[in-house]
Length: 356
Ligand code: NAD
Ligand code: GLY
Image (cartoon, rainbow, N blue to C red):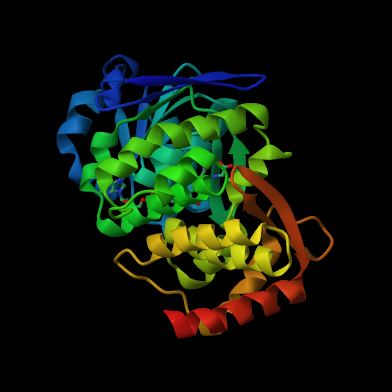
């Protein structure tokens, strides 16, 4: 079991990674004034797990899916916490993928101005990314993650045994965020690029979890509130979120499409090293070609681009901002006026339509 400390100026949390990490719940979850949030799929898949660790406490089961990461459901969770009589020393356990981690983490941040939160990420995406770092949020008015808080979990229990039950599409989504780290981290880039077998091999992906978490913990420790370095973790996300919101496709696969578009834009405007951009795009395409193969609607990419106007990285100057990898282990922020951004996406979509 690996233990990584995430130390911010105001908080220290521990991340445990390894089979059996969830066993820590035996000590942490005991007590009737604790509370767990799980989604309906995870709750149905793991009855013995919930019986073993959460038999004492109230469990809120959220219907699965991004469409349930809403302000309304946040209210329902908070009401259930109040009705269960939780107090300041109670703990909230978020057991699930990024949707549960984000909404339950926000509930923990808000209840009595903050109670202790333990993240138990059960998707590959949540284990390498969303479970770590304390970003919590819900979607509102068609904007992703627009209401949220930075609120660090006191512990994150990354137990890779959960990912064995993930459907192939969710493994691919987790790979999406791992490829994002490849744009930022030389070691992860090399591991993926030199991998001769499929990029979706579960043992291979699980072996990369510690490196991804270490990378994220280092970035978050240096810049918890995303004033600088943490913006790097949004590689592929400006266009990825725009595609996600306009297509209903999953977050991780949209990050891959976002990286494909944004890397090519960065090459076109000379922002990234051409040879590196090409290698990165080759890696992204290898990931995208894994089944199930889900394509965005290239003909409506111009309309999807509108959604990028609400991206949190933008300054108030009409420009669209993207975080892009520029060469191994290096990234930058890259801005384009909206019309150039949209025209660039449409041009790339035209080429992709012919290719895919
Ligand atoms: P998700 O939570 O919707 O989970 C994906 C699917 O997998 C769901 O159907 C879920 O029920 C199912 N599932 C979960 N664990 C399972 C398991 N062990 N076995 C089988 N099925 C399982 O989505 P996600 O991909 O985990 O996360 C995406 C969300 O995370 C988005 O809302 C995104 O905005 C957010 N996110 C947040 C951060 C952050 O830093 N807070 C970072 C990246 C993404
Ligand atoms: N996933 C982006 C971040 O945590 O900052």
